[in-house]
Length: 246
Ligand SMILES: C[S@@+](CC[C@H](N)C(=O)[O-])C[C@H]1O[C@@H](n2cnc3c(N)ncnc32)[C@H](O)[C@@H]1O
Image (cartoon, protein in one colour):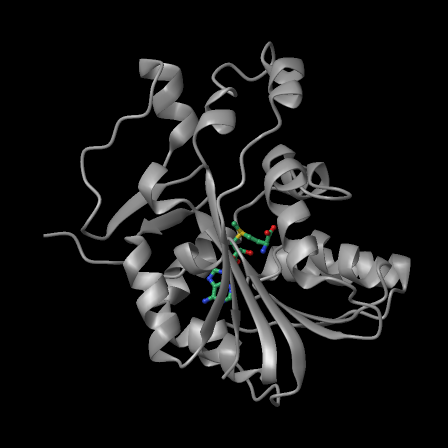
């Protein structure tokens, strides 16, 4: 029987991400983030000028920097040494006023409960014991504050790889939790109901669910370098959820 890794072991895995990979995400993330995730998160957030936003599990900090550029007061939380150091280094160079905290979201120091919005993008599937992390995000919000999270769409996990292999999407299992090995770390598949029911348990009110698709023109322009990219036009690779604090 295999045992699920601890949160600490998962964080150590994220530490192995090479610097060149973090640099390649400048200034606004990788292809999928630029075309599918960022536009939805920014639309859902609306005008962030003067707003306090927590980027929970901020990684190398690209989205924190995008928010600060748009006038938000940003706090980024990231536990992995290498990513935290990179984001700190960028802050030193750019002086955007972003406050970075090195912490595991499931053992977070008290952040108060005054954030207008908390963004937790592509982080919950990276955490084996994830429910305390979602709770920490919700608890950091002011009453009525906005909680956004994105995950790889649990119904279409590993979309590009399976489309490349079969010319369509195929799925063998969905209901149980299982590990998905990534290049540098491990993600954990969970059904959509796991995330949404926990949100309900925390008393949040669902505002919107987005399943963004890629613009066909962008897919055509990218087809030579990314075989199978048309899958992103037909099937959603991400699920993005907006909910309000009770
Ligand atoms: C796929 S990356 C996403 C990073 C960033 N949000 C982005 O969109 O680029 C997953 C991130 O989750 C972080 N992470 C893993 N376990 C965590 C935990 N227990 N608490 C907070 N962040 C965690 C990793 O260190 C990594 O930075």
